[in-house]
Length: 221
Length: 258
Image 1 (tube, chains in turn orange, brown):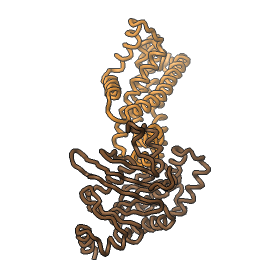
Image 2 (cartoon, chains in turn orange, red):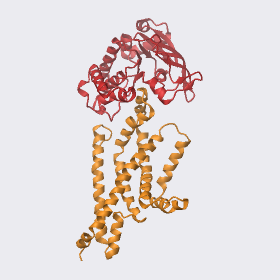
Image 3 (tube, each protein chain N blue to C red):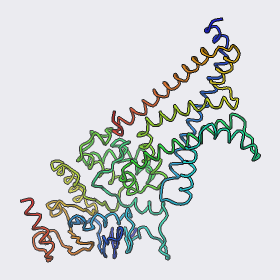
Image 4 (cartoon, rainbow over the protein chains, first blue to last red):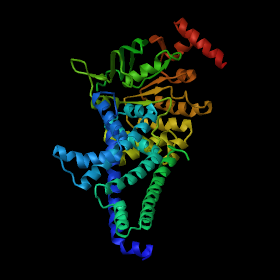
């Protein structure tokens, strides 16, 4: 049996894996981004104890290896009486972990915004929330395009860890097929190609964001 | 809002930064329709005074009134206003900055409609119509869809003036509006400001443009070390000031531009 045949016969397994990886990736990306926007909003304003705490949580999250965080959620929480299924654990882990990283990217973009941007908004009667969502955040996002791209690729790769807690993602599909035939190379090469295709799509989407930013003079090639 | 109250009233304003006393008891009234120019050397406190009027700088002492209503402080216990209350007070004023501070992610038209729509709650259609009118007034009808980075400094500042006018403010505060401009572009901005003065807008202008201040102001105020040391009609101020310091300041200015 040649490699092509082997992959062809297991197309259903790969299709399921790809589908699950895409669901994990897309849903987690969107919610991690929304979470990060909310975190960056909460960090706006004078330094106080809640803000310092929030910053500490973000820093803690960023120093934690993703796999250990996932283990904590999936194997650790049941000890506290909270049982999550693999999907719930996977989504929570990906969204909060990468949300923290996205938030850090936004925070850096915030500090590089000229003070005059907020001052002009205040001088024209904006309240804090409207100013953040309409004046500051769009600029922060447009300036952060390349960093977002990088982080999204990391998020995509971290979805592979979910195969360890038995979620049937693309990596789990490859493992299952290679375990069946004891031929590791073809299935792994196939999934590498698929991961790569997803990152190419992500980069194409981010190029559109970059074009918007360039049109406004916010970034330069 | 009280129609007979001064548009801006400053009472005994004090402000310090990191131990340095910048303002030491400023008193000033600006009546409706007046153009008041604020002169003084760099570091005299004139910009700080302007930024205290709309609470971009929070004063350490003294009171600010806009149309008779206290800015920044409310009630018998003199508590600080909430974010929302402060924003509502600020929306009655508008400011034009030295560095323009246009919002780069928005087009010229959107820069002008943004605050009316999202602060004043004006409908998009109405805000657009008003913005089109204002951009025509400042001579930028052909730039509606341009982004700020593509404009010259003079054009940017004229957009900023249109953005300020779109709030229908009781007073417009100008913070050295031409100081960041190439000399060749100063004229177009001053021409717009002059037409506003003629239209009867109330303006407080911190500036180094002496000729402009002389031609356009109803009153000239001179600040030195955080205090107003001279207030006069422009003719008197520039030709026959009672203040030795003002005469010295003007003399230095004449020798550098002659």
